[in-house]
Length: 270
Image (cartoon, rainbow, N blue to C red; front, side):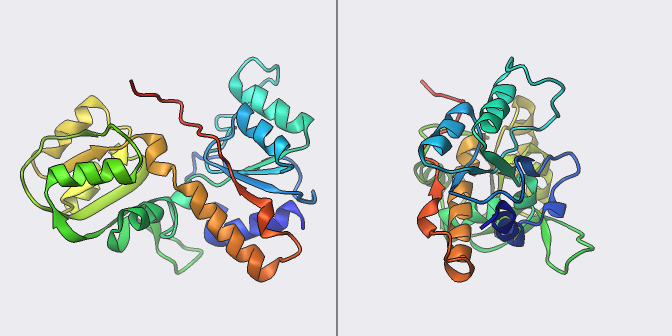
């Protein structure tokens, strides 16, 4: 099986033309015609990720975030990005990323958050027109909890479920929470959308100081952290690839689709 066969499976879930214009998606390092020995699925591609791929005999890294984003003018190994790319090239390891292409599908990053949190009847928070398909695409999701929760219980539930000991949030309003919006990654741009959609709470990441003022006693804003909001994305990709390979490509063992065991979260809490 070739790299192109694997990426075709991924693009059935997240077509690359769904990605935002600013993004850098697709095969970033390597050749589509290379035969695949194994696939390592990760959130980020770091030097330790490439080393893990080497140790596991995986010559394709499927990464949510693109290691090459703004472009490279030199390959001297003077930055972590350059060192990752050099290490991958030296060891014949390809790197593929889908980033916002997966953000913009209903079964993507935010859809996985809804699944993990048990949010029911999820719909896209910010729909966008898609001239190439009848499928509705867009950023974020909004739905309902099975039962309303008070804000303190919701915050504890989110901390436990999203595997973090710390969340940042806006003022407690002492109102029941049932309608919840979510968006994986940096989601401050969608605060107004969550409020307009009558969400009781909005869970995302990377809110700045002044973003919390936008709550205006209309919504509970919850910042769980960037990594934490996207951490289940690699599970989503492994599940998708495992299903596709089981059904259509048994020649490549399901055991060759591996979930990275390394945390790539650069933020620590003390």
